[in-house]
Image 1 (spheres, rainbow, N blue to C red):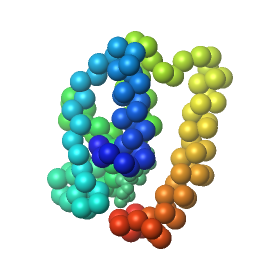
Image 2: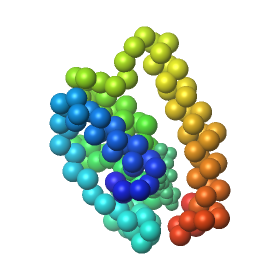
Image 3: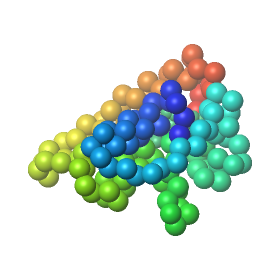
Image 4: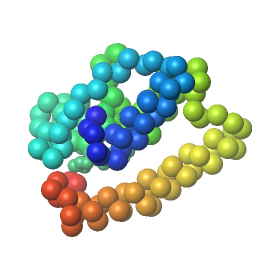
Length: 124
Ligand SMILES: N[C@@H](CCC(=O)N[C@@H](CS)C(=O)NCC(=O)O)C(=O)O
């Protein structure tokens, strides 16, 4: 995880919301400093070959490298007080909006921001 990066922040906010509801997941957070380029170093590429954050290591040694699947995994793994609730239609609508935001809004905005204003440069 990394403070001040949008996708890790999304997962950290999710974990904090669940903790507020009394669900303690005991997830150790390891900082990967993207400004210093640590996400492209071998230690992190061994966890996530795309060199992005967040990344969740599972107990079996596998890694989940996408923020929404990390959240969905934690919903399944810790079902008490889950945040994805409601009817099938409501849950589908939430996932629909997440995908629209990810693919059509945040992705292009991030690419533009990184290409023009970020110390990281354009993501590869
Ligand atoms: N689709 C991925 C996107 C992950 C992503 O792009 N994370 C950014 C930080 S918010 C990152 O690692 N950027 C560095 C890079 O792409 O080189 C997710 O939802 O987790």
